Amino acid sequence: MSAVAAGQPGGAARSAQADARRARSAHRTKTAIGTAVAAVAAIYVLAPIYWLVVASSKNTGQLFNSQTFLPTAHLSWVANFKLLFTVDGGYFKYWLLNSLIYAVLTAVLATAVSTLCGYALARYAFRGRRLVVGLVAGSLLVPSTALVVPLFLLEHDFGLINTYQGVILPLLVYPFGVYLMALYTADAVPESLVDAARVDGAGELRAFWKVSRPLLMPGMVTLFLLTFIGTWNNYFLPLVLLGTTTRFPLTVGLSAWASELNLAGAGQPLYPEVILGSVVSVLPMLILFPFLQKYIARGLAFGAIVGE
Amino acid sequence: MQVSEQSELASTAIRPVPASRGRRPGWLPTSRGQAGWVMSSPFLILYVLFFLAPFIYSIVLSLRSPRTGGFVGLFNYGNVVGNGEYWSAVVRMAYFGVIQVTVMIAIAIALALLLDSPYCRAKKFFALAYFFPYAVPGIIAAVMWAFLLEPDLDNALKVPHLLGIASGPLNPLSFRFVLYAMMLIVTWEWAGYNMTILLTSLTSVPREVLESGRIDGASELALAWRIKLPMIRRTVAFITVISIIGTLQLFNEPMILNDIASIGSTYTPNEFIYNTAFTFGNEQLAAAQSVVLALITVVATAAFYGIMRRRFDIFGAVRGGRR
Image (cartoon, rainbow over all chains, first blue to last red):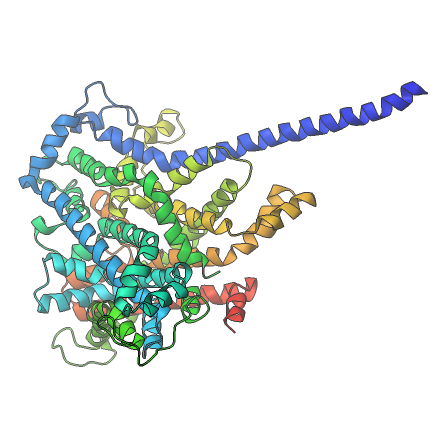
């Protein structure tokens, strides 16, 4: 009797323990499988970048005659670096500098212009506001391709071809930035604070500068990063608008080198230079990326999610 | 993307302040109405000069004769419609889009749900790794992959031959496979970007709903399928539309692959337009081609939205919320 009475709760506890153990082990198995799947995807993403860095340490001979994914005993980085900046008239240093100029100026100005406009759309009921909202929203639908040919012709008439401003000015029109900052303003700047500044006698622009701008800063950082990366990575627009090699950004310059790889009689193909040049154009961003990821991801997602 | 943005701009998130008069001027613009104009004018001036003007000009240009510059009505459009090569580029990209966008969005959804589930370690690392390609210019990605898919440069492509499975080294850049090679590259570039947007979107799924689902004994897979996925369906539609637009405008990758693998310089509609304008100097025809491409993009986007709305009620809630 007592044995049975004592045995039953003991058995239930044991089977509950077994259940828990089974659940734990099932969880462990699923976690292992899930992590393995994630790792496979990570390899797909990271292997080419790893290869690029490894390959940038090889000279042409080593590129074609060594293990693809392993560095060779003799690293040619120093020699490749010297070649990268001297070969073909030393154009690479111009490209690097130009990419920086295009990206920094575009990002600073586009952030300023979009923030002001987005703020105005979110906060003021000025006449014609609906028209502006319509224009911004509608332009998101027009593919940029439809603009590039006429843009080239217009810039040609105004002498903007082959100039820095010719590349930068069209890139300042970033409707998504206006949209983002309008949403961000509605989200981050309490109307009462701005009203308080007004009561203190501040004009609208001063109120914006003293009260709203600091609150908008995180959104502006996001916008700066989006436009910086967008400009740094841009290829189609500078390709069309620039003809002078010393004005090229990295993307156009490197693709010019790449297009000569298979041309017969173009001299020594620039394989190591194209590869190392690619690393140079990617590496700064990859190093900064872990610190910037949060800002960028938040901005991209903000636009997509608020629409939910 | 645009539809949700549009409705949002017009509705709830933005509550403008009515213009007030008779306010003491503190700094330059005296009324709020003026301040609105002053602040939006830098953007508007740039918009008119570098967006609206070229846009209108491209339509005007497309109605002019390539030879005389005179008005010829829809002559150029007739040329576009009758050009088999242009349409084969369009059809090629439509085929490309149906496969690549589907696969990429499926991967992005799967990875986002995986990183949002309890069944994965090192989530932060994976999230960062997947997003990395966003920082790589498309042109660099294409160069990198073109080298990796080149049998002379990549020993891995020789493995099937050495094992006796294939008659020679694999060449993914040969004409037969290059479209699929391009899918591989474009997926590499954008799957993580889309995953990132979805993952952030998943954080807006209320945790209490998931908790009560768990208490009711629903498996994580069921939660993902029945609760999470329906709740992010609008974001899924959003990134799908962006991807469709991107596919129809593909340019960088085929340009580079053509340099390395000679696939021809009219492989995609965008390349075709570039070629018409800058190799043959026929800007009028190029303008007509780009207007047609823009129309195709709008129609494809609208068709996608139409299907989605009917089948999954994607935008019903947005319209309802608009009041």
